[in-house]
Length: 600
Image 1: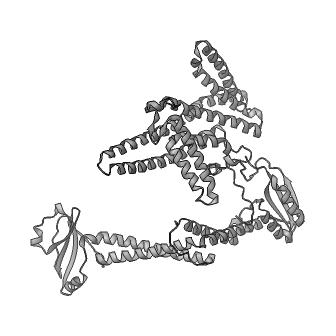
Image 2: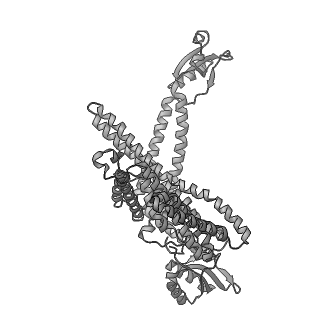
C-alpha cells in the first residue's frame, strides 16, 4: 500500500530558518519540495560531485573479494583513502595501457624470436640495412632465397618471416605477396620481461586494494558518504524556500506522512513556526512511500525496477507477489533445483549483511515454489517420475497437456484479477461510472470461458451453461459499447466501443504470452534429462567413469539451474510489467519519498 501524505507549508522568520531545517533533518520525515535550479548552485554541485566520488570508491572496495592472510591497511581519513584509490586507479590504467602495447608487440615479435640488436648495429655500421617481411608460404618461391639476399627467420601459421640484407642503395626487386613489417626496437625476451614486470606491479596494486578493503576504509567512506549526502540534502532544502516580505520570511513546502504529522507539528511549535497543512490535490506530484507487510515488502525491489505507482492508484506490489512466486516455480519446475535454491538461500542468510537478508528470504520462497511445482509435475533433477511405474500414481500433473492448460489458466486468472484491480482503481479515482466498461470486459471474458467450457458439463447441463454464457456475453458487449467513455455523445461512444471490441485480439495475445511458463518449464526438464543421459554414458569408462559421471552431473545441472533461474526471473517479470500492469490499468510515474534526514 501507499502511505498517505499531507502537503505542508512551513512559514518561518529568516533567522529561525536554519534551526527549523536542523530540527526537520533530525526528525527525518519531511520530503522537501525542491525549488527549480537548486542543483545548479555551486555548493550543491560540489557536494554532489564529492558524493559521486565517494559512492564509486565504496563500490570499488565492496567488489574486492576477501583474501586470506591479508594485512589490513592502517586507518586513514576519507580524503587520504580517496587519494590512494585515485593513485591506484591511475597507475592501474597506465599499466593496462602498457600491457596492451606489449601484448601487440609480443604477438608481432614472437615469430621472429629474439632480435640480435648488437649484430644489427654492426651491420648498419658496415653499410648493410636489414629489412623484414612476411609472405604467405604458398605464394613464396623458395628458389628466390638463392637469387636474392633473403633468409627465412621464422614461421607462424601459413606465413614466413623473411629478412633481407641490403647494401646502401640496393633494393629488392618486386616479389609477389611480400609485405614489409617494422619490428619494435625491443626483442622478444625484453618485451616478455617488461610484461612480467607490469604484471607484478599490477599484483602489488591489487594487494593494496585488498588491504584497504580488509581494513576500515570501506566503513570510513560509507560514513563520509552518509554525511555528505545529508549535507547536500540540507543545502538543497536551504535553497528551496520561497522568500517573502522583503526576504525576511521563508516559506518551505514539503510532504509529511500522516503517521508523522504529530511529531512534525510538535517540532514546529517548539521553534515557533507557522504550518499550513492540506490534503493532496489532483495534479500534485506526491512522493511515494511504500508500506507493505513482510511478504509483499520482499517484492518492493522488483516494483522499483519498473516504476512506482502514482499516488492516486493502488500499489500492485502485494497483488503481483503471489503470482510472481508461483510463476518462478512454474518456469523452473524441478523439485531438486528448488531444494538446492532453498538450502543455498538459507545458508546465505548467515553469511550476508543484514540489508541483504530479505533477498535470501526471497530466494527461499522461490526455491519452495520451484520444489512444489516439481513435486506436482514429478520432476527431480531432470528425472521424470512419470516414467517410473512405482511413482507415477503420485504425480498430480502427469502430462504436458495438463501443464499447458494450467499455464493458460493462470494467465487468464491474472488478467481477470488485473481487470478487477483496474475497476477498484477507477472507482477510487473517478467514480463507479468510469469502471462500467471494464466490468463489461470481465463479464465478456468470463462468458467466453463459459461458452468454451459448456460441453464439459455434459449433455444435460452444457446447453444451459452455454445459453447463460451467451446472454451474459451480450451484457458485457453492451456495457463496453455504451459506457466506454461517458464524456462523449452516444454515437461516438458506440464507435469507440466497436474499436475496443476489435482489440479483444490483444487480450488473447496477452493470454498466449503465458504459454512461456509452460515452455520454460518443459525446456528446463528436457535439458536436465539430456544432462542425465549424456552423463550416464561416461559410466562405461573404466576406473574414472564414476568420477567423470558425478562431475558431469554436478556441472551440467548447476549450469542448467543457473540458466533456468535467469529465465524464471526475467519472464515472470515481463508478464508482471506488461500483461498484468496493462490489465490493471497501471499508470505509474511516481517519484520515491526521500525525506530530509541527518543520515542516509
